[in-house]
Length: 474
Image (cartoon, rainbow, N blue to C red; front, side, top):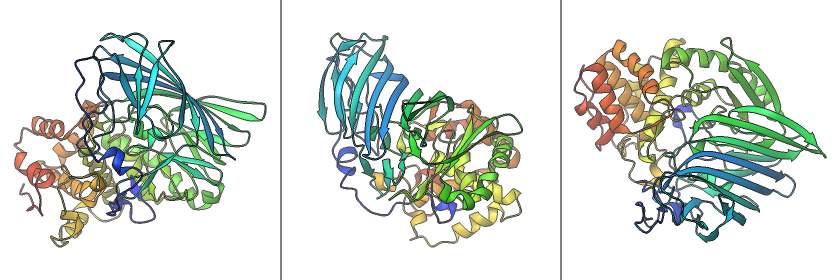
């Protein structure tokens, strides 16, 4: 994620604004994080920063979403089928859903009892789901999707625009438009069908499998077969100019641009094939079946780009460095996804360091110079406010240390183990955890195993400890 139009590495910064819309239901209080012995699935996964997000007792394998959007009235009619595997006997379980009116819920074709508690949809099947069973929950719902304000003051979720909606979901926005196990620890495949008025374009993740117009309305069918965290899902709608092409290696590209941003977007978006080729050389094989981008026109309240899986999304024409940053997330964040929001630095540190490397290898400042400039900042600056691996509170999840200090930690790692070992890490880490979840402990152990070096002191100082660290000695 990067904030626009500021320098790309600024990212979505914490602004000290406590959100009255989202904060009470995601942060305040504590939801149960362990499954009940009475067959009740937990109403939280116990995330350290967002304790009310996610649900326990099952693992989602697939979401099938059918959405019909009335652009003029901003009304969404939805039908979601959630296929999951039970991790315990389930007499009841929950999904995350914000706003919207639930009409019917069935589990394996039988009507289920339902109640709402804040952003939780609590489902009691007609028959208990046995541990190990695969079950399907179908939810019909409608209404005007609700935009959320995050603890750092940012806008997310289903964001209405003057010609549709700009849909971005980090960290919690997915639940504004479909019922979901809304936590990065539960990744799944997606099939998304979106119906909109003729002349509009509806965009989701993965590949466009079908596009049909009937009765003045067009349905776009998208499939994302590779596992995806819910915060990376999209259903952006608008009037777009669409370009479909392929890279030299044959990777399909789908690029959609609001005509009002077309002229300014042309140059940075033209670098996508080059950026993908360069990042593939640095980070290893591209982890998905397609790529692309979406550029909208100034959706209200959204001043950041987001690494939407396979189609990074920008609220306006991006800079080249922002394209580099968001594309790097395909490896770091989208394919290798953190187990909890505490380890967002594993996403943003790598994506920020990708910018440094791009500059270094394309005639700009060296990574060392960028590091030195940042290290020269005073100890009371935001950069040193908290360690990247322990933001402490939700409003810090996108703060300076999560981006810049995490990238600095990677540069210190590079100086300690040397370029040969470091660039092996950049390739072998995303290969080892491809389409999986990982945390700081996984990364630390991986680096020590690959290099044969004791790195605990370095990681403790730069990732886990308060204050301005001393520079590491190689």
